[in-house]
Image 1 (cartoon, chains in turn green, blue):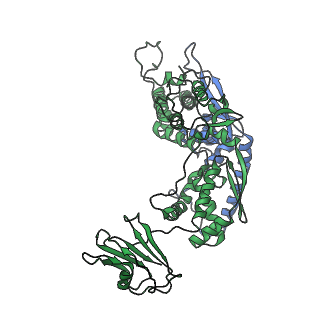
Image 2 (image 1 turned 90 degrees about the vertical axis):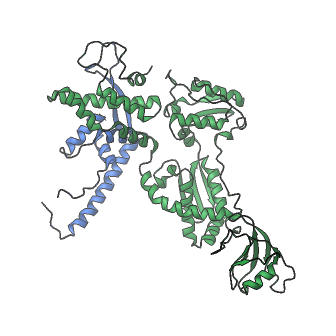
Image 3 (image 1 turned 180 degrees about the horizontal axis):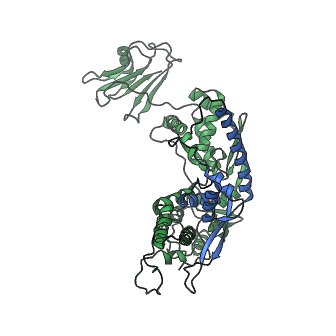
Length: 426
Length: 121
């Protein structure tokens, strides 16, 4: 039993205590500390350290007051009052543990504005095929060969070493455990009380790692890599530092794409790209956001990026998405001001004299040419006519006419429209 | 000026400054009080999480010391005390922060010097 768990039960009454000035049971300081320990919800050894430190503070503070002639009850109450509510203190400690970055909050609030704006734009970019948005697949740990499709059943009583060996057996690889870095995230080899504490049957390796990291109450505490044929378990921070590399990207095409699609000058476009990377790829890690792990410097059309290896696939994915927007797949135009639920309507939008909705004649269909006759002249600026069909918001182009090649109305072919179709002239 | 807003104290600068010699938490709070002529009290509920953050940022490092507790029972372990000291990184950061603070102060003084408002009593 560690000190922390012994002391987190201040109200035990079953054990007779030796006669003392104050019985340990009901000692307000112990009670406060027990409350704090519970509320910290941190790895045991971390919580024990915080608890011990605050106990030293409280007891020293009481002693100082006793020396000054204050009675003990008042001294204890005052010492506790000065520290404050256990819940509030625990919250501050948890915040401190989660935000190693001094100015993170400041940056987060400034940057959240640009995130919101860019988020919308990105959505517009990728909405070409509305049913299949571009999604970045997070794949970290399962990069390890031999662990991708396995099922693991865990034993909550495992030591960390037993877990690691089990994983090694499954992957058929020798295992190396970097204890020194793991101690920083609460996995202490010497702590006999440490158990795996994750109880799950036939789960993927990723799930097991996620549950372990959640239980350690640390963001991304434990990581894994293969190195020289070994599986190496270490803290995520440690692995990140080991795998930092410097990469140069030529982003001329991406800058061009972004400035064309968002109507920006090249410099603004470049800044947007940089912001986007530093927002969406491990925001806290970037020097610009107060972090230490990653840095980014633009030089002309190039970006020099120094970051842990696992950042790069995500960075490259973002760059690809931005560039893909250069030839934007068509976004479904709005059918403005019409009752989209009426099944008998056909919609016309864009460069015609009378855009809007048109009711289908009873019992008979209508062709594209007939509809355009109702909708009036197609503007000379129009270069395309498209017919969209399907559910609202998920329509697909079913007919696409390039007007530069064959001008209306000499166009020989015609196209039968269905109720709910949307004709876009652009 | 009882209601005038005072500038927010810079916790990091304060803590790093008093840690020019190794201290434990309670001693830090006393040092802060002493150096500010009793005008500044750093609540333990704020101080210790701040220390945890500085330690995590490797600006300060800690070591533990066993202390004899007045309340210790025979055979029981004594209390532990956590001492802090600046790391090299912390020393560098402190020097930077002092420079930055002085520069800021000079700038603000220059602004204030230009006002015609009387200093209130």
